[in-house]
Image (cartoon, rainbow, N blue to C red; front, side):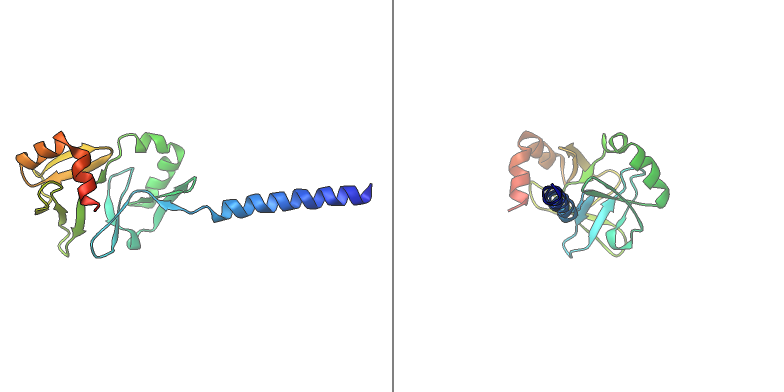
Length: 156
């Protein structure tokens, strides 16, 4: 009886350790991050929509296996309380590729690959949770007609 109980305890311990090990190995994914051409990672805060460099961030939340960066520590509590509220209308940049030393965001038009600087009146469109910027009304219209074609082209 004692041997049977010990075998059962050992078996339960092995199963528990395997489960803990699997959880520990689950990779944390940075969700609200985009990478510039120079490899610098940038984030957009899902709460206040503030932006910055990941290497300068001091506040983030981990929900499941997803890490969300915040612009400030006070954004953590409301986000953790109800992440769905903040992610419902959250939009990430789709075609930004750099932020220059003056803080200007640069993009490549997904249709003609022309580079531009994001300004207040820069044409843009939200598609599948990402905001794409355009150099002209013509390229915006072409993108609207076949967005998948241009997104796939950009990732080649």
